[in-house]
Length: 248
Length: 359
Image 1 (tube, rainbow over the protein chains, first blue to last red):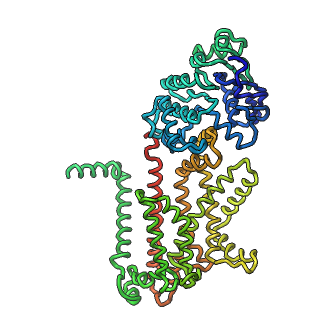
Image 2 (image 1 turned 45 degrees about the horizontal axis):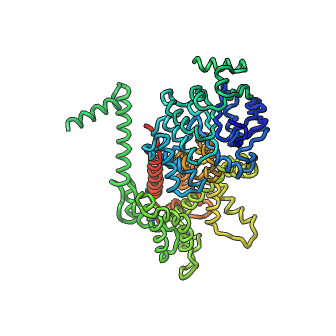
């Protein structure tokens, strides 16, 4: 990653607390075009809060976030515009249970991106094929397995052709045997997509990450390339975390 | 045949006679039900006077007095609506029930257009036709409306208007980013929920004119309707709020994350799901409202039950079995309407969940 690449997400001095609990404490981060960042850390370290601030599902108390040249503020139209360009995949999938898989993928295309139904369906079919579930198109989410649902959720986000993809612990709610089918799909798309992913799947991180970030107690403790991160971490806290998670 | 008997015997053993105590209870309850059914059939049919005059009813007091209903039925239906103009009511009733019938049947073509007609055009049309005073239609003031027709007018207008109002109020109550809207909705809902419906009717009927200039004098029936709509929309709002809160936060977040606007997410994602959760509550309110319309009695409008009561009070029909007959008739009609609504609601609820959940 060279520094002259365009910066897609710029976060500076972000603070966020929930009551007396400090979730983010002066966090700054830059995501460049095409970069793949994996964030890990113990639970409660603020990693989910950080990526949820990028599309303003959480409103930070202090700090500045610029996404694709637009500074996030309370301006609803600007927020909607940014969300259109930022895809998100949730831990709990959050598919719309009253719509079929296909409708889940076309809904935002039709209403947000104002595409025709036919064009939206074509895009949806394309991405559903790429996540390997075109045959489930007319089923409802409740009829699919967890792994299939998460792949639909990935396709739904990709259908909007976002500039950045955010993954918020995408495999944490899955049964172990379904984790790899979701990770495989994520690896496939990571090549062509700016990605920020919160996960504990270190195999995935090794495979795709350009940059590893370790967070603890609301701060970025360590940020380095994967080779250094896994073999020679600087901080003791990172070493301890890695030993716990890798030995397991 | 043998199998069938065996099944029955098995079922009886499992459910009614599986222990000593259980058997006693079953026998006692069975005898009681049998006795009750016999009494009802006896009173309603076997001992009832079917044709004749009040004299026959006075002689045979041990059963229902159906001639009372036969003689009065047109008043029960139309109130004091002039008899030569009742064809207008019939036309409107016909369209009303035909429209509902077409909408309940799912393969009706142009359902969307029918819905639009029934919700937007039909209420106006009914008002013009029933009220008259335009074209060659003579003027029939709402004071002469009554009976079942009045019940239907009041109930359907209140039901149809209170749902959208209730949805707006519920959304407003949850709008944390708009403190004034939120405060208004909270006050509105809590006020109307905290006031008995009779008070609301009194207030709209007798107090509203005091606040308005004398030249503004709108119809008694309209005032009652406004009262019912305000009252029931507050109840609807709380039911809708329950449905909205029953949804996972993830649904809001997922639609937000896709860039959907507030109204897009509400109409496409949130409400369609919340509606399913709300059906039992909505039905409860609708049925309550349907029966509550009877309270217009206290502001001088005679709905279905009001007309029946007026009939009972007629001294020419003085006989002990007449009041029972009148009330029994009212109960049967109300029951048929409310029960069919509840069957339809259950069907809709079932249909919504069909195929969408893993079983």
